[in-house]
Image (cartoon, rainbow, N blue to C red):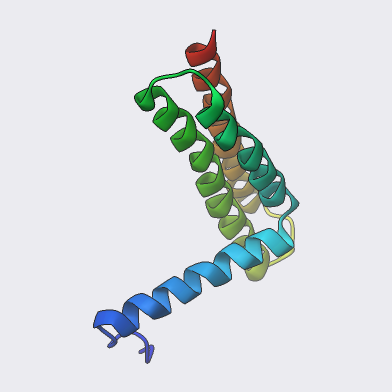
Length: 120
């Protein structure tokens, strides 16, 4: 059993936050797609504050942008786990990686649709 499983309270929260920051650092350092999405968010989120839209519309525009980052983190995690298991080509590994990529495509399509519907 992991020595971290028995931890409770603030120590557990601080440890979890540290692991989360480690994950963000790893994604930023090792995943070009994540860095590209961070750049996209750095451009789009301030733009959402500049545009003459309602607070609800602005919130939706920002949430869909952040959703793209979340999906990319999951996609990268799945790819890393599959690569850890084996670098050998296998149809199930391909399917899993392709599904993660498809999830990101859906998320980015949602960003484009939401922003288009609100702005047009």
